Length: 250
Ligand code: SF4
Image 1 (tube, helix red, strand yellow):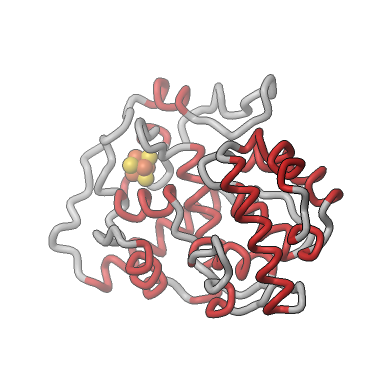
Image 2 (cartoon, rainbow, N blue to C red; image 1 turned 90 degrees about the horizontal axis):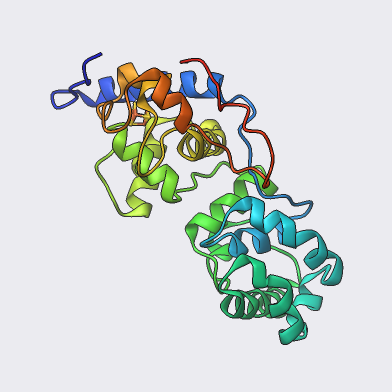
């Protein structure tokens, strides 16, 4: 298969191609969802902050104990720092994360009655909360559509030729303009799933990619279907069986 040339593509052509690719990827990952475990907006906010520089699987191992020990913003605000650091140690950068979570708790208590505010403009005033984290919380805990430009999302939209922007805010706006608002949250999940499982940073599995024919980066990774199938992966608990390990080409 030849790599698609998009150099002469019109804005309308790009929108159509992006929507087609999203439809196909949505069919591939109809179960795409936020992979952090949570029950409340506060839990998701904390889990998202903890997910920096580590995997969602790693965060999910720590948060059940964390949320039981510190069930609300006031408890986090007055946490015993050493105890909190010990709890967060498996997630890495535990000292900084313990500090972030405590100052977040304090800010929520002082300015928002201990509740997580449901608006972007309020969320981004909280310590340690940028647009990415705020959009995760809005989209998944408040059902407010949001585009989450994390490392996977940014890499994929550039590879797929949907944007050339590298600034996350510009990416968010440019990609947002290609899709109806109602699709933003699921679009984020689907692309993050694709990035984690198939379109990896180092070696994308192009040979089994369901959107290869519309992708201008086809061939940056492995194009042989058999070899590409072996590259597929999930974030799994140690010892778990990878259901894609012997996957047939898509
Ligand atoms: S896996 Fe390859 S073909 Fe598929 S989106 Fe990524 S770069 Fe494009």
